Length: 354
Image (tube, rainbow, N blue to C red):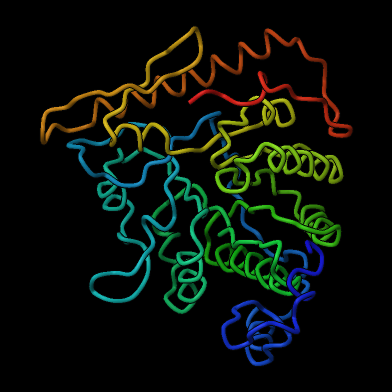
């Protein structure tokens, strides 16, 4: 099923209701084929990367500036792309602000805070971006915001979809990577592949563009599952070895797998919204049972700004994560680990406790 998708049950398919990129639905199939310039997607011809991009181990994700009075003085944060790129009240589609100062003020960030936009989202947001990005000149507008980089929108891949639908999504990711790059925006590619041919395509792109030093993978949907996460990490490690150079992995939602990720990718940045979301739910991080964290209720006065509370949660979460990884390294005293075969991971080693 993973190879052929739903082609095996094509005879019973209702074409009128099917939204897959399937040759049985001829008009839709050829329209999509033409809009991306055909498939399989060609290796990337143009990608713009930030020179000397220096990312920390943990990058807090900030969704908005609600319930805060002042500016968050973090050196660098991640912001979900589709929290700040959306339809405007006055009409049109694009960033919520067109000026870098106003952009950061809206998010209640200090003027010196560096911003990385992360484009992992539900399909409805991704489809809207695909439909409007070029026609509404979103790329040039993002360039003016002085963001550090944006990750490639991560279109969904389904095991029960026809292979041609996956090829269409891969081609769209390549098309958007090149569009944003040509607009002067630094882009970090989101790596996704389901076949050897897909990996070879990515391999050629990375061999052609030595400046690609950072990649993104998300672990907050299917990647939550241990077996899927292990397979994904091994695939990325094998890919890194195949291109013959180190890669800095940005793992969105990968904190639960931090130990394994760090073992395979010494250059690692973990991105999640835990401190931000927990703060808005009035939860405070408490170090519990030596290194394991616990989120406890923290009552606030109605209307009380969350500035200090958020800053404390981010600092505590970052410190806990750094300590936990150092503790694991001290306990294991592991030798250098090869990508293949994969070392066994016990249940105790596997997940952090939230």
